[in-house]
Image (tube, rainbow, N blue to C red; front, side, top):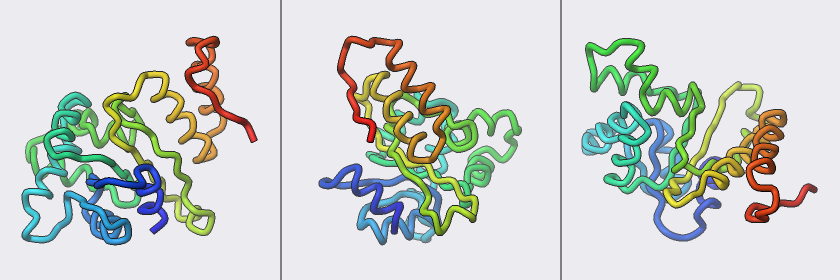
Length: 189
């Protein structure tokens, strides 16, 4: 429920269409009252294949085209429910480890390479679940996001996850980029 609440808070009104793992699709869609693709119901074979194609895309550009085509608005990556390898093997039975490592889903979850068209949604696993070791990464599709905004949002996500050295590095990069612009301002509490 906490993840669904965070996703809805990133877009208080309007439709959400979420790309995530099959198990998470079911629960997040229910608690968030939004559409998901990739559930494992027999009547959703097209959605399951669409999720596999998106996560198995061979580049961020290919993934972006599929996101537009399927009208995906958000992506949720959960380390506990890593369905990336089965999706990839489903589409590419003769695939190599090298091919899988270059897939969009692997790059997003394992390498944590976030394309500029995804806005990081700051999220931290609740304290009572932190001991499980589950990592959660939430994104909102934002094709109009500037590189500076992408870096700023990434830093906010790092702060939320407690990754302060990385956040400081990213905030410093923003300041070096254009210290006088004032385009991005924030308050330190």
